[in-house]
Image (cartoon, rainbow, N blue to C red; front, side, top):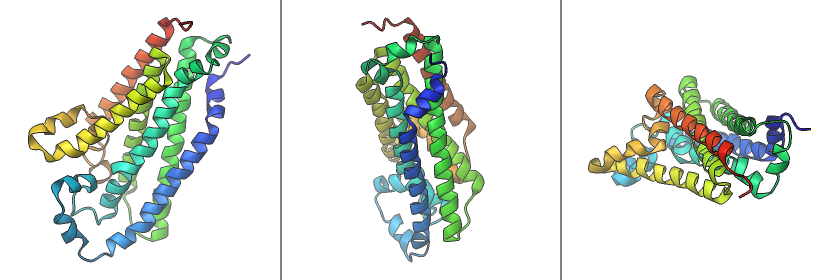
Length: 265
């Protein structure tokens, strides 16, 4: 009989966690090792200041782009980091319940002496553990790369930015989990969570350059993830709490729907 769904879920996702962790280490190393080239480029700041405002929305403040924190903020936390964490979290979250249901392995899992709530919570715990492994890998890649490249980097700012990225991944993953647990449809769960991520990214990136529409950024999860450039300015507790609350609501919905749904349909 199976009693520990958490360990089984980790074993099932072991390869995925390893591959994504290698990818995040590589991202951290590549960006930090490439930074000295940007730092030593002459006239780069003047060039960036001449770019259209819409393009600057992707790289952030031209004055800080040539600093270690500003460069990492643009290249890691502006797009690539959220993309890697988001893809991992959404795929894992969508497959947590809905994937097992579609593959007809959920019935076998529930036949063991464990409640639906415990199954879901332990699987959610495995998702959080996987994201934590990615976070550690990214931290090692960034800090290790900065040491190899020989430049100083804010340890606190980097840790806070990765923590915020971790919370973003949890939020997207639990949204996917909630939809999957509510419907039993893996594709619907993944598509919905991906839409939340993509639309949120576009809202936060482009609406910041349109003053009249700027308030709409507040409905984007990306605004709460890095709206105040965490690696530069530190984490915003209100933003962090907002993401945690969103993730908690998604988890409660997932438990509620999964416990009451007739899995035979």
